[in-house]
Image (cartoon, rainbow, N blue to C red; front, side, top):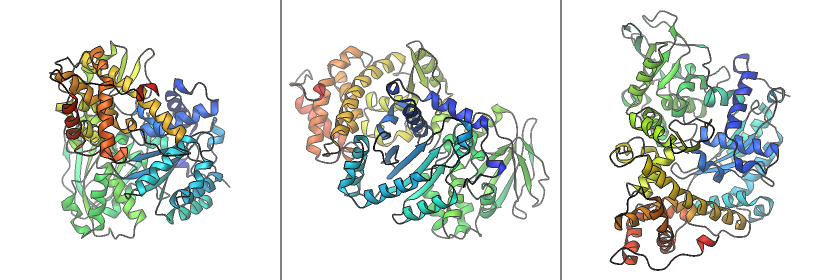
Length: 571
């Protein structure tokens, strides 16, 4: 039996078409050899990894395990920064009629048995999966042998979510291992991740008595500041069936995190530990922009808004909703400040969002996207045939241009020009925040340098892809880690270090390539002496100084390196 959502939450044919456009935008030339259904499946998985998990386009294929013998699992993204293993099942249909059906229930048994085998470390499961999935299974077992990571299961589709009975079975089965389930169907994806056209809806908030200040007005703006109870906020950000209402963050989807992170954990801990009555003093509140305030704003009457959007405090409202719906915590004594601003002027909304989020550790990339230097760099790179993606969620690349993600460029620059390869792996969220002026320094970074760096990194990436392919092919029989899969930024760092020691310009691509084999040899020696799993080795704070010691030992008076590493170039 298909359980449709309420009319308000029912996906339309327009939603289906929008998502289809986004799926096509994620198709890769590498998929041309695959059947049509697999091309769609891979493209959809890429879209999810880019938009939901915020990965750059050139990272996504590493986490796709879709194919024969995938046991219903299509992607596994191991988020080391947040110690979370994200397991996803992605299903797509090719026409709108089928999109009105629920997520296929038969996948529930596949996921349940997979999680059972995974958590009980059943070696025989490796005989039932493809090489890419076997590699991820071995990586997870390696992690569990030395550390504690949480696991989440995600169901992504361009259909309706699971119907109630199979969903209950899956939730109960996962609960035995403290694994959480998240769903994103067609409506959720279109209105929470990729929608380009604003949905029209109304919502109301009722302030606490005497918790409202006099309205503020200018020629283009009007607003009110008030205090609301946490339970009133939960009601405001919930749909009729109790789920989080993604329409509230459609303009701010890049700040919404459906996965755990440090900021969310801090908010959650402040709700669960201590007196929730102190939350008003500990949290900076939320800012809501709407097209129109329909009702009176005096006293404690409901404030009714047309098209409200949370432009600051998305994480706060999502965590409060999660705690209210998923725990037994009593939030009844808690309250929070709220600013409600009426405007339809896009420039005003942009100013409010930027001003409200300046102190946020999340979303800074998008706040920096319109900086003069970012725009200038994008224009200069365009003349080199590069489409520089300044904002996340940009899927359509102009014809004749090769896409390059701004975050990936920032990571490379952090390793290449700033000499911080470990931070390039572990602190990517700070590239557009704390490290921004250092990474994107206009006095030393220009399009020519970026192009040289991209070409050198492309050679490293080609070797990395070969190493990853070899690792996948061996994974069903053994777990032989290839360090280059994790150590690519460290290789780029050593290349730049060798160039600097030889007083070679970092914009000299050909000279940089001449140092590549020597750089690989040095990082290979470090990896062997570290004697740890690669995912840990290249996240260690001392990885850079230890590599520099090896570099110093190998370098002669002119910095030349004796001997070359042959095995990697012959993969």
